Every structure is written in C-alpha cells, then in structure tokens.
Length: 496
Image 1 (cartoon, rainbow, N blue to C red):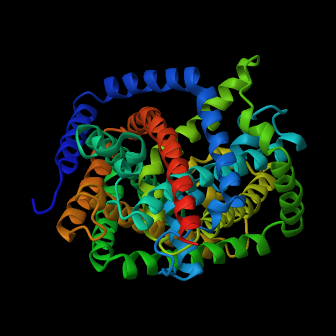
Image 2 (cartoon, rainbow, N blue to C red):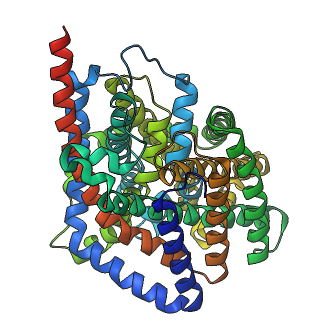
C-alpha cells in the first residue's frame, strides 16, 4: 500500500490476532488478561504512582526553567490554531466521552458504593469523592500527556524529526531507532491506540444506547449499538477526509460549546450554592493534598489498597495506554507555541475544567442520593440520565448529553485515525485518506466485534497490560528530552 510502513502491517496483523482470540475464546481471553492485569496492579502499583508523580514534578521544573522560552518550531513560527480551538481540540481528544460517562457516576460511586478511606455515605465521603475524582481526571493525567506531547512536538517541529514515538528516543539510541527497535516502539504505540479508542467507542455506543433507552424506551441491545457505531463511523470518516483544519477543529469547537451549555444548565438548575461551596472547599483541599495523594499507596490497609488498585492504579495505567494517541494529537496541533505556553495550556485549562465539571455533576448526583433518590440502582451508562430526570429541563439536558457523547465519539475516532495514519506512514504529517479510512473502519469493527462477545473488559485489560512496557518508553523519552533541551539552550546561547 502506498507509503504504508512496516508498523502498519505488523500492527494490523496483531490486531486481527487479538480480536480473533477474543472472539474464539472470549472467557479464556478475559480470564487470562484479567489475571495479568491484577498482578500488574498489585506488583507495580507503587511504580505507577511514582512515575505519574515524577512527571508532574518534571512539568513544574520545565515551566519555571529557561527551557520554557524555547518555541516548538522555528523561532519565527506562531500557533496555527486560536487558543479556544487549541484547548477544545486537546480537551476533546484527552477526555471526551469519559467526562460525560463518569461525570456523575464516579463521585457517586466513591460516596455511596465504595469509599477510598472514609465512612460510606458520610459528609467526609462526600468531600473525598470529589477530591478523588479531581485526582483521577486532573493535573496528573495532563502532566503525563503534556510531557509526552512536549517531547513529540519538540523533536517534530524544532528538530525536524518524523512524527513518530521512536523519533523522540534518538538522543539516547541514535540510528538504532530507524531499525527494528524503533519499529517495536511504534508498533506498541499503534496497538495501544487502536484498542484504547475501540474501547472508548464501545463505551460511547453503550451510553448513547442507554440514553435513548432511558428517554424513549428503545431496546438496549447489541444491534442498536451496532447501528450507532455504523452511523458514527460514516460521520467520522467524512470528518477525517476533510482534514485537521476543518473536521476535527470544527467538531472540537462544537464539543466545547455543548459541554459548557450542559455544565451551566446543571450548575444553575441543580443545587447551585452547594456546588459552588463544595467546589471551593474540595478543589482547594485537592491542591493542598496533591503531594500526599500522589504517593499514597496504602501498604498496610488491604481494603484501602483494593480501592486504589480498582480506581487510581487502574486509571494511571489506562491514561498511560492512551498517551501515544492523545499526546501525538496534542503535539500535532501545538506547533508555534513556546514550551511554557504549551504546558500551561495543556495542564491547567483541562484540569480546572475537569474540576468544575466533577464538582457540578458529582455534587448534584450525591445530593439526590442523600435525599433518598437511589441513583446507584441504574447502570453506569444511565446514571447521568437518571440524575437529569430529577432536574427541571431534564429531557433537554439528556438530549444535549446524547449529542455531546456523539460529537465526542466522532472527534475521538477522527483524531485517532489521524494519529494512526501518521504512525503507520513513516511519521507523515499528511497521511493518505486511504490509510486513515482503513484505520477508522478497523477501530469500529474491533469495537463492534468485541461488543458482540462482551469483550470490552478483556480489551481494557489488554491495553492496561500494554501500558507497562510503554511506561518504560515514557521514562526514556524524558531522559532524551532533557538531554535535547540542554543542547538546545546551549545552541541558543551560542547564537547570541
């Protein structure tokens, strides 16, 4: 195929083999991957906590250091996208469906189903539920995405390297990255992206189906989800065909506008004063406790450790598995910004927005739970719609939420096809539409096939397993980046 690299053919074959295993022996697949995942969570939990904390510290160092003035591109380059479009695009790629899917259900679970450290249903559990949600969706994940994206953008735009994960390791391994070792790194990145996005598509289809079922009594069946995936696939392929400057940009702007409308409606129509007070106190406590939260591994409390394995360690591995896709996309839309401007935008804007989102939706859901309305009785994909049902204009908000999930769905898949296209065409910034469409169809087929055999949990397990070796790649990327930034500063000083 024109311009396709070895990475394309090797990863495509691996995807087919993995899906075939999932279809032929779904129970064995889920059992085997579940056992490995549980072992990794238990044995490497401390490692995931450390690596995420260290990445956060690295971002803080770079932002206040002279590195911050280096531009991602030539010194004369300026940003291609407006700040609003840029933040909308990285926000849509990095969080997307997850915000809508877990916005009400995660804080509610931490309060009413299983708490991290406090008494179930208590006021302390209420505050802790919000803090832990900020922790899982805030500064840590965005510093991790930020550091990986910074490395990619620096080597891509400042040093003229191909848009590949392997290119970022050349300061350490040199030309070896042009051979089998580099191919291995890029295959791992593409594999994680395909299954990460396929799982997200499965969740998105399930939530759209859940919303339609809750509102209109439509059947919550596999064939309905296949129709949803089919329609969305056609839409995101049209968007992918139109390119980065049109399809993804416009969709991301729509996502942000819809998200803000929904957020304002819940804030105004929900328990407004309680939301504002809870956000002020719990977000402040989250910032205050950021260091202690980062290193909390509960080694002497089996119950608390079990909660950490199920939530925090799971999330850290999940976000690391998404890093190749999200960080590559963030890098691609960030040419022309200084490193300080880049990190401030990537880390602060989404973290603050996520905090406001979880405070608004989480406080509203928990407030209803405390008043005697049992929202935990609904499946996760319907929790949000059940909450809206208790609010004025609930039907309107449910319709907006379904629209938002749909546009996030399209944007995530569109962004992923663009990144997969780049990674499998030698790092081309303009991958062919043929390659992008093939990857788009492949992602949707993986989601559809695995939904048919109930295999999404097994796929989650698979990419969390893939996150472990990729975390070592991230560590090497950090060493290579600091080495290259030091050289770059010396070059800039010598020019003066």
